[in-house]
Image (tube, rainbow, N blue to C red; front, top):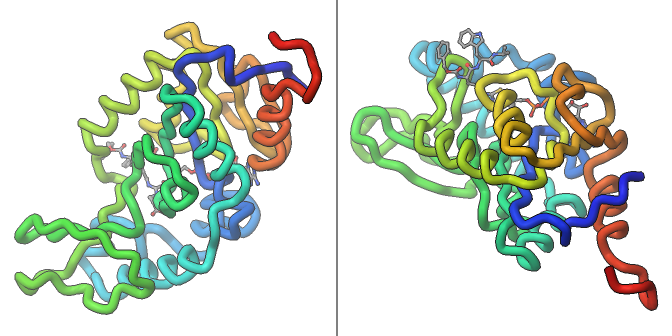
Length: 243
Ligand code: BV8
């Protein structure tokens, strides 16, 4: 186990993917039980599908709202929120849309791929946040269908969000990537900015990823177990010499 101490770092970025929420019961995208294995994103989760059949897209997204609404943040989410309360320089850059980091208490969260809990109207621009599961009224008051405020394949990411996330990465002195397969761009490239900034890079995952060679520490295990070990390592044992 590495002897990393969070207290040795001023700007810590947690870069999370679906594996962060796996222990909460939220399906990941790829690998065993992955949601893209069950649902073809080209039918249920992309702009073309929404333009073709918004009702079917909403059936899928209301199903996912119901699924995630029944899930709770796990110990890993709560540890990250705790660290943010203790240290102002903690930021979460997540690819997840489940909102579990915020439900665990994290405040500095960049949702690169949007949120299951937000909608926008492409006709009048109205934006809305609602944790209704399912969302009863999928029509905007202007009459158009509300669109899930999610970055689907082929959608551009918000340039403001990408800039802010890149800024956080470029100022990090510790980058902890958790539960991401490093397979979706441009998000997958972001840890390189932290590496270029001279940060220490840690990858927490069950298995190697295409970008594992980028990392100084490759910790294998579940998000919450490895984060707990890191926090224990970081916390001086009672009566131990102060560092
Ligand atoms: C873009 C939305 C510019 C939310 C997602 C052709 C046409 C268009 C674009 C492209 C193209 N070819 C390539 C691209 C770029 C494309 C892309 O990257 N494709 C990939 C597949 C090659 N990117 C885009 O389209 C992006 N936009 O590029 O715009 C553009 C525009 C037009 C044309 C060209 C370029 C938009 C990308 C966002 C896509 N949105 N989903 C939703 O619907 O749910 S994808 C989906 O993948 C999620 O967003 C997710 O965040 C993302 C990454 O997945 P992960 O989070 O890493 O999850 P995954 O299941 O893959 O892995 C889980 C990991 O956890 C595993 O490693 C596992 O081992 C680990 N794990 C499991 N359990 C645990 C664990 N670890 C620890 N503990 C555990 N317990």
